[in-house]
Image (cartoon, rainbow, N blue to C red; front, side):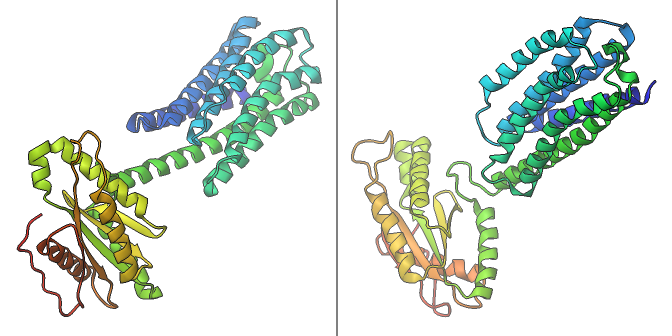
Length: 397
């Protein structure tokens, strides 16, 4: 086996490994459409390598040579589709389809040219360059690329440019062989396969890192998010509260906490059903999100209990926030509920005292909430000083 043939065998194995890795990601997280296309792309790459071996073993065969060529075109087309999905963009179907069909027509058209001619070598690589350049263009337009996104754009640009460099390398090194079956015996084949391997492995590894990072980030977000409301869950809120209090201790910015509870929620479920109760929770959650400021966060910490952390807000600001939510919710119409059905919520507010623990901070806000319940519901109460509060929980939801 020639050196180029050996590298081709390595490429076949590497493509199989990366194809399996991307397929695993696609199966694990079905929302990762890009992973499916990357897996399909490497599958087409494997087909290309197998056909290259077949061409070398079978002797002159235009059908096999064109099939190998189009398999690699298909690999690049699928890869470009995957890049579009990764970046949240609509795949440029018309451009990709035009390049694929154009590549097939071009491949037939250049068969009449001498294999060693520079024009044929350039035209042969042109579809490869074009498809990879489309992917690179999409990557450069990623709104929030981060270091990984920028590096991916650079690698794809280098990969696309290297397809234009290859014809000149081939021309300076005696061409790509007298026929497709002699390609693997040329020095050019060694350069072509080696350069493709280096760039391909670099791009594939980076894509796997980006995909795995995104999968882990989504998993973490789901573990900290309440499914029904879309707000943070109790665990997410407690982590946010701990980090916010630690930051406030260093910066001295005011932090206020609003604990809210839907009034008589059990009666809502008993009267209208649990599905209706869920719609009330969703409506209240949406209202909280609409009222949140830039540095504010909301969470659903119980069945009908919510918490809002207002970083940078003092008691007067927090009270304005709570009153605006309370008054808006009291007049809000809920989808699929009887005409005239209205619902209310009660609110308790506390401002962080320097040196106060997260537990005591929540207890004071909770005590204010129960004061709102005891004083008639559908109201806002402010917690007393840290040393004087005394929760009165005689009133239920």
